[in-house]
Length: 405
Picture 1 (cartoon, rainbow, N blue to C red):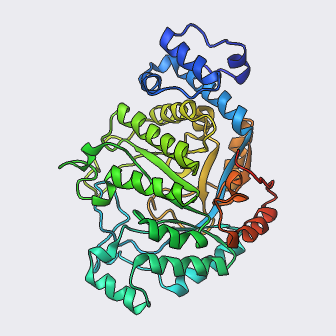
Picture 2 (cartoon, helix red, strand yellow; picture 1 turned 135 degrees about the vertical axis):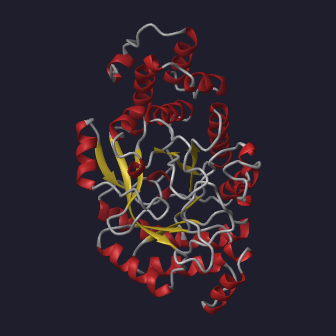
Picture 3 (cartoon, rainbow, N blue to C red; picture 1 turned 90 degrees about the horizontal axis):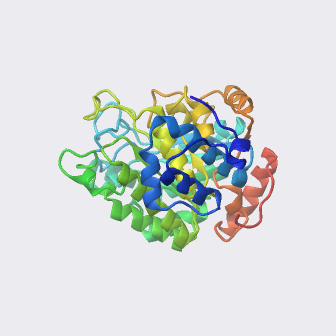
């Protein structure tokens, strides 16, 4: 496929394009995010026009993000893999009594945090199933033995342990109430929840979220709106290939854009591709092609020019150059210590190799904290965490940013 450079874009050398595509590019290059009609049209374009789309998206990324691509050195803390939801593609969740079920003990959390900090990790990703205490009496007994009456209470203790060991927690605990997020805010530099999709069809019988009540898009959007009201930096994203349409993808990205417009708190959007896993109900479903995912990235960049965009590198080890071309500026969390427990079959890339790939494409790979610089010196961060952020930022050699970009 022919490659087009930033200079080609700046000089207008994009070739003969259909009028609708050219109009969308003109709108994007003028500094305005494209509208939903234009976004849908670009998701549907022919493969021959993808080099032009990627060139425009890359040019816009360079204008707003420069030539640095970031990642977050992290440790993955799977606090518990018990979960109320039963998504048709998930291998993370297990029921009590399963040989693969676990709940980390405080001493486990401290051991991982201590070892991760020694390896230079700053992010403590607290990841767990949705509200298992609502579904399992045995788990409620476990919480009681640990001295807690809710999962969020226990997660707060895990965050305190990580902070004690010099790490910065980022929690993704599924649906949280406003009060639960307020409780976690002084202990987390950011929170996360994947929107995945705004499609309500996925909740119908046979859909990917039929047995996942907490995947109701209205509930997830409501939580993210409240996170904005609480001034919590927030990571979210869309999941491609689980039964949604191209229009659903546009609507999902627009919903995130509107949340950010209202709250100013969306620090990052993950564009994640579905991977079929044995033993799941969706094991035989076709996975999105690489160019399909890259097209979604490029369209997201044109819709939200200043947004931080990420594609997980461990799910796409052979397509890293493609996603750089399509407009990402971040690779997300990468761990030198722990697995990706949600995708344990997909190993993290080696940082040296990833840096070499970035360099070959003209980018510098840099570490970042689990809160982006444009949020770290602002009212989005609890005062008790600001000194910790500055200490870790200085150790990474990252520039200090006082205000939102």
